[in-house]
Image (tube, rainbow, N blue to C red; front, side, top):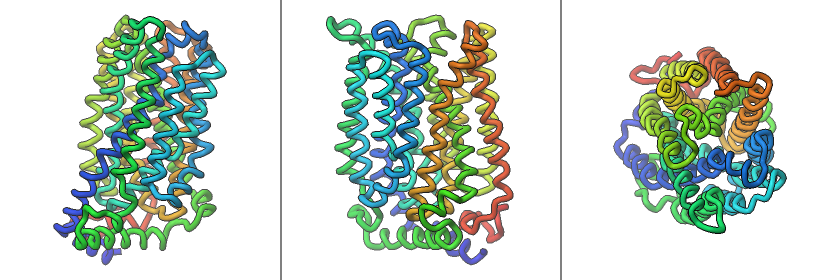
Length: 456
């Protein structure tokens, strides 16, 4: 395995290749970040409308939890078909289509009349958004070598903190503005405006994204060749050693291994995200609005820096395994810590724990995706990545329902028991991530630094 390492290391020192990667990142990453900013905003802004929907439309806590989670059922059902269609029609068209249709559905939340319409729209939002995230993962895996891929995933993940830093104050402000306008509720204005943002982003994506390096007019002939050479080398390794075809990918043990890891991660992410405004409100004693929105943006501000710098550092197998294990562990510890702080009247300490939890799960997400993209290619990648993301994202369905059920069974003023339960599964993910040390993949040799020996 030493020969591929030497070739790959020489490739990565090539100034022409570095130029191609730099140009591609400047051209593609801003549009991808904008798409995911709007997507994450539209799937989580429901947290700002929870109390208002209960008051104005009679939506109970149980119906809210079901609606918040059922998004992921629609998402899971249509994830793999959407990924396969993206593989057929190209990322440029399909990602634009996804954004436009989910934006229309999101804007329709302004017309919710009761529990039934709320739940139906949440399901449809999942259906229309299905394929965005794994589609981008596939897209980045086709454009960027494994050596820098976690860094690109991390830049893409910056959309999550950006969406919350911008979105939390934006959602709170729109609610306040709408409440001051006769004939419209604040939550209606919030859903309408933020839904239309997705439609605009979708049209922009069609003009800014390029399906492959071969089609990139912004690259010189030499830059195209350098980038295509290294990507072809990696794809050859993946095709030699990875599963081939849809069925083989869906039956692959490592695909299911990372599905479980990703499920545990999403439990933590959405268990925190869906209820962050309410948790901040409880910690500070303030009603949900612009002030709570600004405070809720603090964890995401720090998470932005953690995600970016960890992503740049995680450029070897050993670093990825160590950092992944560490940040899954700290995610669980900090969620448990926020539950303890909430139940003991420690608002500042609670916010610190929430901030550290957000930094941890934002940092570990890009690292997690480096593994399946190192052994999946072609239609196997479309199916395998779709499976990991769709079933893993069911954690977003389970998290709010589990939290609500636990709090109903063991009621406390702070809801700390429900929060604490969500902090347990990241420890399982940490143990499984450390277990990847016993994985042997030919693609790992391409990441070796400094020597040709295996990084294991």
